[in-house]
Image (cartoon, rainbow, N blue to C red; front, side, top):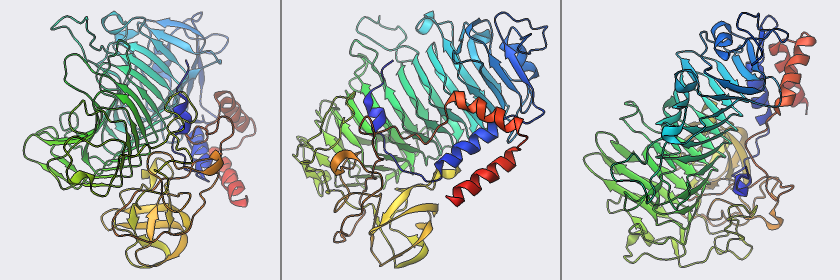
Length: 596
């Protein structure tokens, strides 16, 4: 499978301590000295003790006895009428782990209950390195769902799940789930011109995390869902993924929904982060006049540094739809690149509710066709639409175009998604240094705390990922925590600044660039290079963040450091052999980092 090169162009924020986060996760998953290892093999027998010499025959048997700290690994082969359904929970620092024994993944098909992974009110479970294949699309698939998960601290990593009936390929419910570095696709069914009237179509979400809190969806390739590739809700962090909903035949439906949908989650509010993703190909279903590439609904949603390309309908849609969506306010859409869609932004009100205060800033809208209606449909007002670049102007201009750039060619190096330079700005691009600043300081700053006009352009990581780095005047510092209500940002390093100093993501040159990627001469950007401080101008403004030092190709994938699977087992085994406890090993690692 060849992935579009755009994955390697994702927004990168060099995080000096991010490797410690990866080690912490590994230590949390590492077994204790008294933990058991069980082996599953097609040549085994469930009456065996589950050792390498005498393995179990089924994952179901191993799932029934595995306890906190235990590891279950499966030998290669195709496992039918089997599933992973743990009876016990793990504990903090003692995950129950289900993984592969070799570099070749075990493959599940026709599982018990038509579901590969079932976790019912269990916590601290990790599944790594397995595959599932329904062996047919939609009603021909022998898998209804890849995973149905209800529990906290569940990790699904490096899996490949293809062909499920749906409605959801994987559905999560609980706090702090992780889905990372996996491929999930071909879920449900789409419509094509040959679909008989009344036949099922546009059914199936690939990933449903609408009932979670603090989910991390990172580094995945998610493709072909009959309805949506992703449905997400409160405090979700979605980053460095490729979403591709092209089914062929010129058909495909919605890609992503970041929505406080009360039908799915009655207490949903918002506060999700959708960043550095590549979203491709939402095409026109025959049952609809148009389509939307991404829903951004609820409150305090942050959508930044994404590429959305090649779609039929609107790029971003917001709406009030009581009783499902009651509020749509203070969502921030900044520094995205949108190419060849039917419309840029649409905001509608279908009943009583709050619809105001959304910020759309420093985005680059190129070759918007207008076939899905007005380029920007926003008759309700109350939103800030500023410093965006349009290559064309809609047929019915109005105040939405004030303080925006209209009629300019952004001058991309390439618009081919498989190119390493896709949607990068050329040296002659008019989008360079044209971005507004995202915020300004309120009062002088002297120390590790500042107040800003709008803190919702950034995140402190929500305890899930590393906090953002920001540029205050000429200084680049890392955030420690944010009090959004007061607009107060605590920093990890002290800074000095005057009142009304510009605040942005780190940038190169005189000001931030428009769109998802910051232009840096030579294509390498190991650290942000602060340019001369521009004259401050009132009002919020967006800011791009510099990208990491490229090797081959020009830019590298930024999903945070990960440790190869082959090294993880070696890491755990050496720690056990040397009698080093997880706590002691962590202290050694931290001392090493501090020493460096």
